[in-house]
Length: 104
Image (cartoon, rainbow, N blue to C red):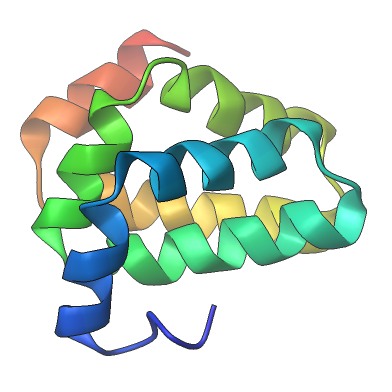
């Protein structure tokens, strides 16, 4: 969470690792409530004003479904973080805005 908060260099390093991105998404999908909340917070921080991270997450198979699943089934704190995440991803890209709305 905090390593990536407001530090472009950290965001670039973290999101350039396919294993890290996959691990975060796996934590969102399979983790317990605390793990989900922290993974969602980390992802929201990574995607905040960092296009490289947004691209990396959107390239990953199943990102959209995982985020939408967390929005509907996650605890409140996880849902808040995931909503921030979606907002951050969609904010700067009409391509992502279309994908989120198409996927419901």
